[in-house]
Each structure stands twice: as C-alpha cells, then as structure tokens.
Length: 240
Image 1 (cartoon, rainbow, N blue to C red):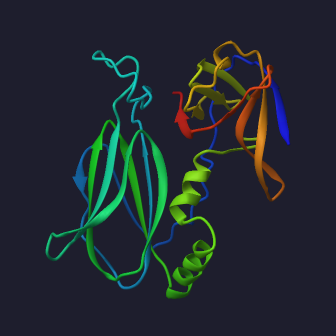
Image 2 (image 1 turned 180 degrees about the vertical axis):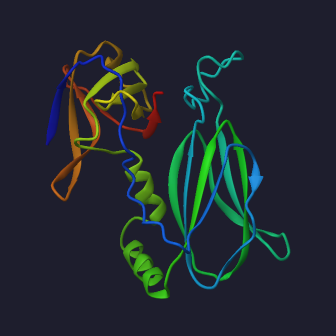
C-alpha cells in the first residue's frame, strides 16, 4: 500500500515516531550536549535504558560531507559505555554510532552504575527505567523468536507514520525533508545508497511497510520512473 504526494515547498516537521515507555516518578533522566558521566544510580532489579542522540543545531549530522567551515554538516559521534559505580570498571558498550539515532537496551543485573557518554556535536538524553522481573521476562520472550529490542528500535528508526507530515522537499539524492503544517518540526530521511533521481522528483509515492492500529508506516518511496528507495534513517528534526 502506498500514499501519493505531489510536491509542496512548505517547511515544517513532525512529532517523534518512536514509541517509548511512559516515564514514571522512579525513572531517571540524564541530558547533555558534550562528553560526560552520569551520576551514580542504583537499580534493585532489571532495568531499561531509553537513549537518543541528535544534532544540537540546525546543521545535520553528516560525517561524509562535513567541511572545515562546518557549513555542510557535523561529524557527529556518540558512544555509551556502562561502568560499575563501585569499582569504576568498564562493564560493556551500550551504543556506538556516527550520526543521530535512538535505541533501547534491557539490563537484567541489579547494581550501582554510571554511564560514560562520549559525545561530539550531539545532544543526548538517557532515560533509565526500572522494570519488574515479569516484564523483563516478557521482553526476553518477545525477542527470542523475533528481533531484539535493539533491532526493533532500528526498524522504527527507518519508518515514518502516516499523518505525521504534510509535505516534502528533497535536498539531494541522499536526503529528503518531511514537513508538518506548522513549519517548525519534521523529519530528515536519509538514503544509503543514494536514491538516484530524488533531487529532481516532482511527485512521490510513499510505500507502506506495516500497519499498526490502522495507521500505515512508510519505509520507502517510489519515484515516477518506478525506482523504489528504502529509508536508511528517519531523524526527527526542528526547523526553528
């Protein structure tokens, strides 16, 4: 199933498409825009980490087209490392990427921890969420015969929901901008490899990957010539 759009030149953006667990009074939130370590936190049982990283400016994260004057993109880097708070020992790598993204990670071991954040040109947010043993077991069961939490978050990062954008504009064959009606928020979609012909497109069909609750979720576009290009990443963006 697909949705057809003619080419509008308005500028706006859309709400974040990622489905996150709701925050509670017990959740811990850490934010920053540079390398840092979180405060020590103690979990008495299993817990989830919901993390996100984005460009803190209007310049996009684009490692390949960065230039010395910084006008074409930012060489964004982001890493999360889990540390044992008592010994300071390295426990393991949580996430590592060049660019922007979001993910979830399930941890089963109780203990006291800190998260070491390595950040270059990235604004980040970490949400630490204690969960019950029962919920942790259900999450593990869901991933045994299917994609992991990390895989699920990566799939979500390559889809955009129907009704969350009103118009679009290509930047080049590798980048497509989606805009909401208020022209303040939206998405930047990247393609790897590049979508040949996108820069000159005057009409697009948005192709549905899945449907949840009656809402289509698009994972690719179809050009007039019949070329289908799959989203590499869908990045919520502010156009202020």
